[in-house]
Image (cartoon, rainbow, N blue to C red):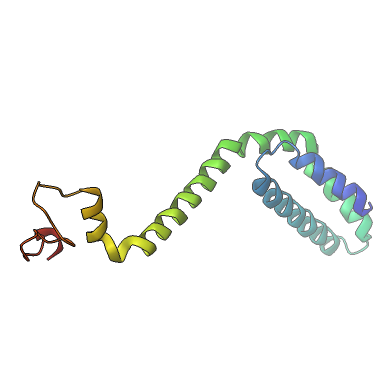
Length: 135
């Protein structure tokens, strides 16, 4: 078996996975598994050539189209996009806290989050008393 046959098998097995990062990770995992299985066959059967071990490995793995259908059912694109969205949301939240966390009292005043009608300056009540939430 040549490298082209292996690449073709891997392409067929992962072509149904729509989410690219999943596709790349699954392809690498399958390639590692094929290499391990081929190495094990060569170790168990010392008279087997590396090419024979690779051919037998692909035969034992089965039909790449069927494996691809099963993998596509597991790796749904919306799960990948949900994961990416959660990562972006976390990054934005951390950036917001990093940039505006030290000025939380000022932000509360600007947006009137704790507005009880009393004038305030930087978290205070306007008469020099600190705001009870920021003491």
